[in-house]
Length: 294
Image (cartoon, rainbow, N blue to C red):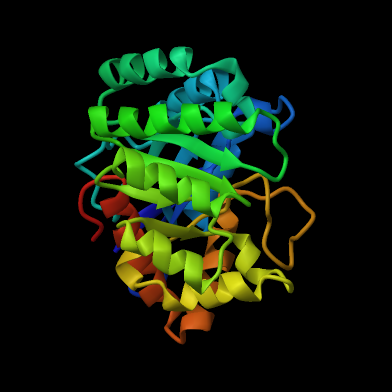
């Protein structure tokens, strides 16, 4: 038996009866919750819902610093390489520059990655989220491509996972990964492609992380990709506060709802929820080099 914190007291949790989920990508920073400091509340709620850990993703220097600070505060003290995924609740951070902000230049982010890795060993587990977004084009595409290529190199230099955001830019995203040489561990966050894109990413050795989009009525291609993805490369995430799964669609998302995402993926694959929870948590531990996962 293990324990989880709930309503100010410890409650016993039977690991065989309660699936232990891992939210591989969320945003609990103040910048994403309209200035409300709700991270501790949402982390407690996630624990009570059977979530064993999460990765808080940075998108620019400000949110990256916030992500690192939150990871330090929310974790039970476990660090990269020492987590078992059983009793302790783990929280980690990524540091990166989102393609929307690529026009700001990547120099500050590059310096921040090195500084945070040194100052907070075992807390920073990834570079990103970074990549290409040709849907909004908030930054010019050449700037996006350049910033992405630099961050691929930074992930390799620091031995961190690369967390990739790609929207309507599959060809260029994969071309850059091939040209730069993908890091040992690459996560395609909030996967929005179909089986063909899934196979192309998997051929590069990437992990695929599925969000609440799998529950959306118009996401049949994403659901097909979730079925073909090998279990040891499949992660689940909330991308909170965005993309809340059905029946919460349109409301603020939160890490506790990763269980709904995982249960939807398990149903698609025809496996029990606890099996998907175990395999996806193990895959997340491998993707971010967290340690072993129970």
